[in-house]
Image 1 (cartoon, rainbow, N blue to C red):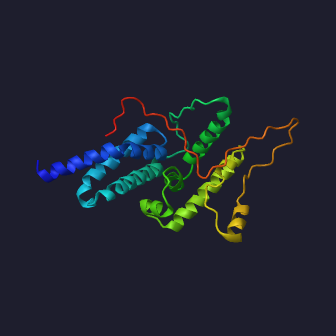
Image 2 (image 1 turned 120 degrees about the vertical axis):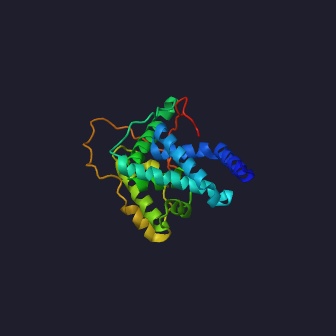
Image 3 (image 1 turned 30 degrees about the horizontal axis):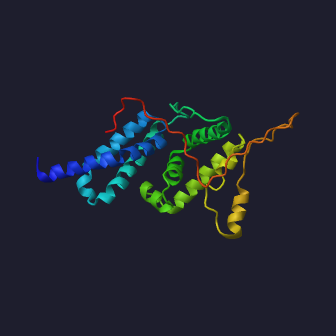
Length: 231
């Protein structure tokens, strides 16, 4: 083996050791289960290894791996997604005063997983991975305008679906407000829910207050099953 090949393989091993855990986390958020996340990671790392020489600078490696990850996940969704898939997500242990918050997080994650492929990818990258609109656009190979519109549609869908469960306030602040009266007017036009009004209750109803957060709350991420390889 040549010295150049040895150096390349050593650099690749260092990259895998340093970044595979973060890439696996992204894969899990995109896929919703560890088995698929492991497959996505293996494909991303394999393609990254094959493209290593032409990627040039080490700074280009992780963005390339993430792009392969997202593109592969999106392609799989389009071919194989038929409604909600079972996952091994288990409730986190929580004190009694944290149960409502945990239920809200689980409900939000369930609805995020049901979004169309591109909307889900945009939300994962923008709010769970904390990428900018420009970074998200570059990763998905779309315009920043498309990122904004897909984000808006996804959040409106989540508000409508969560509104029926009394949880829509948990999305407050998820979008950056637009400046001036135009932004306020647009915010007022977003419906909380399209479900029919409930019948009057005969007894006082307890009002559940979801936490107001600046971004989507992170869904619970369990440890992968024992024995799964990390590549």
